[in-house]
Length: 397
Image (cartoon, rainbow, N blue to C red; front, side, top):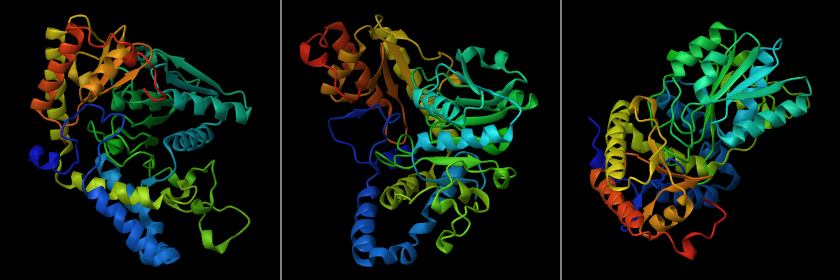
């Protein structure tokens, strides 16, 4: 059974902070400091370039990928790390379109994270093959599926509202119509149980700086279904995705398996920190994480709705349809969030009017949630947000 008191002790958390923003950037595991020090000082510092062999840096993307695979229901050898999530979206979509050459429509929803849509449109514009990107309301995705669609590209958990797509059911319906499916797991990996093997999706991508606590700039991951991976042509045919990178051949030959989805030099220090962060998960059961996060979300919703009737819940009320976050609509949301942060309750704001809170039982408990509710209630009841300093927009909201 997962010991959440023990997992909480594994994270560094300032004593005056209630951190409800792990769905945007996870906090620092205490082990990250020593792992970063050792990687920088003992490996890079002492080994220099020999670290690629002596510290086995070159194998990090696959080794860490296998640790992620276990947490998203994927087999060893199907996930590799590297680059950013935007790059992995581009790779997955380019490969998916080539698997379905007779169709021209990429379907997504208008709740998808904008970068996924930007990357899709940019790829389509570059290909100049008459592809189109079509977006619909999230609730209309299933009824829009048809044999005209080449690729369905969705984020499982909506970044703004927390609304969660039924990954398995949608994948099954799409594939029955010959559609290739890509899932972005940025807001679900490490937050809700994911079974990529069971759902049979062709591709999945995700980031590791949220629920996996890999730190700002932590590398993204890409999954390709094992029976397809050797058919997939990497659109970004980088040196380290080559079958024999140190043969320095002029012609590209993709590596066998998931290694072909590597692009450039792996971020060794970030991967080492992520590897240390993933140690936290060795004694954690995903089903228990999910059950506890639902409890915390329900506690927060009930408390906020009782004490702050001026706030409108926009996350699904049914916990089974919601990820590990809760969002409320608030006309003065930006200023309210700044007032909260000034009081030590850190969530975030999403334009135009959403205040958003993440709930991760690895380092949050009922006392934290209750304290956060009380501070929010005080700010709203006494209009403590209504001062000029809280209304000045910063670069990152």
